[in-house]
Length: 259
Image (cartoon, rainbow, N blue to C red; front, top):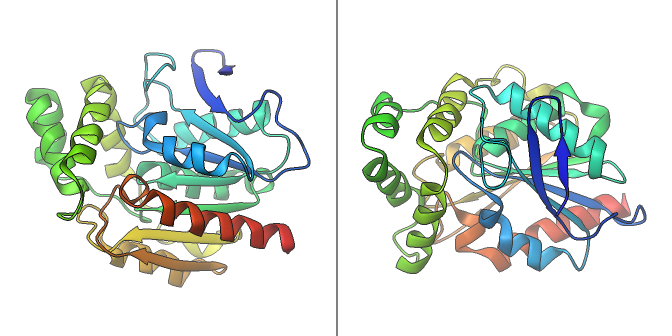
């Protein structure tokens, strides 16, 4: 598992090869607030037979360096560094929630480094309740449990909900607080029309954290975007409907290959 070393931090990644072959399309997955590579394990396992796959753990998360960030722009710099170090060609960057904010920002800041976007359960603005920001510092376990109760559909198996809760709880409170602060500060709604990459927007129809209207706005305002929604799934749609999400991503990336 390669590690991208920067001056003051390191980024741990899971890759489908080392090095990755240049004759395959590349997918780079970016997790959301408090996430790690395990949120994408179904996508890694399901898509590595078709494409190069890179799953990045942002600083402060998983096995990356301890300190996180509180600005989406800083995390976008990390994604740029991963592309430079590991991607043999311009990847499709797939981001969930905060990761989707990072992907949008990378598209605007580093347009020549990407070939497309997959935006999952995200929006052009991600305001966070003050009670969540406070609770992550003062009542961590209960706040993480509450966030995950809202993150999954009522139709989702309890085992999956408990898995999602346990994975988020592995991330230090200060790092998750910084993530949610980064989300709260994020707002590029006046710039999404500048995104020039082909974009697939995915959302669970039961998403309570970033409702479908957020994804619909993206699909209507990013020039080369299309929207696909998934019934009986919530904010963590890639964990709730892995086979369906994988097939949507597979078809989208293959369409870029043909194009």
